[in-house]
Image (tube, rainbow, N blue to C red; front, side, top):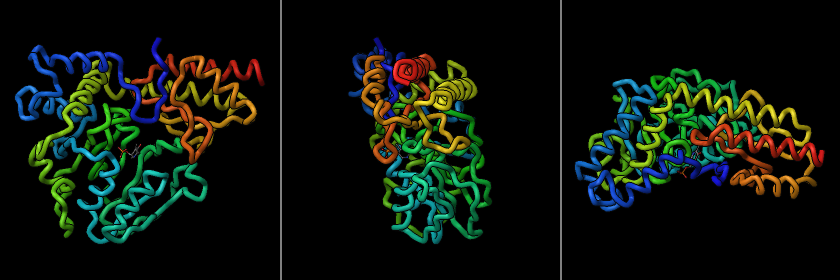
Length: 354
Ligand SMILES: *Cc1c(COP(=O)(O)O)cnc(C)c1O
């Protein structure tokens, strides 16, 4: 029986994607070669790259005036790439958690950074909504979904400053107006594919405005010019991302997945609120549809609860050490039926131990 996989990342991907990917490791498209042993410059792999980029653009409804590239280094290198490519004199950041904090640290190496709002004093359990951004700032950076603390921007900052966003843990989960952004980046391993590739969506004309001496691997312009092939790209991660995007498109795209993600979130949060043995750790209006963080109201029940969800073949719901408790990560590929299994275990704990 399949495990109900709540891992925060790397995480669940569609079963049919795993099946097709494993077949392609043995024999890609009847070529007699594994996807892992062919040149990234072969026409077979160039077709994979082209389809992956075309699907990103189609599924996210990306306007013509944006470029899409797949690079390496994870979102953590994205923190540096954002700063190198966009920070000339002054940047603004909203600090909503561990990843924003790390992004701020990298930007500070290159220039003046203004943290315009932060929820750190309340252990990042909410999204700040009131702040002012300096008119002359190069950009405003934020993290759309805070994977560790389970909060999510439900609407994006309204500002005249160029917007840069780390969307690693909720890209492809909901509708986004791409035109609001100068640059979006996201590691693949939450909603897109296996670890190794990082997606960058870059507004044309937004680059080239800094005096930074950018190392070539961090410089978006040559990466765009070489169409993600400046050097060897993470071929397997891009290939499996392409398969995941095919799956998403075939099932109805963003409007389908957004609805399903909302259903899953409603299911778990209504149980957290109904069940007297549990409490949510994030402010209700800012709760993430991707990562639901919750605590037991009575720590003495920990052993019972942990045994019950283990027995139900649930995996990966232990909370991050900075929050404690539990975190149910419900990325795109997690079926609603898996959330129902967790909710049933929560109800059973209440019935037997409440
Ligand atoms: C996971 C995550 C990261 C870090 O990604 P890496 O690929 O490990 O560098 C950064 N930001 C967010 C929002 C994340 O969820």
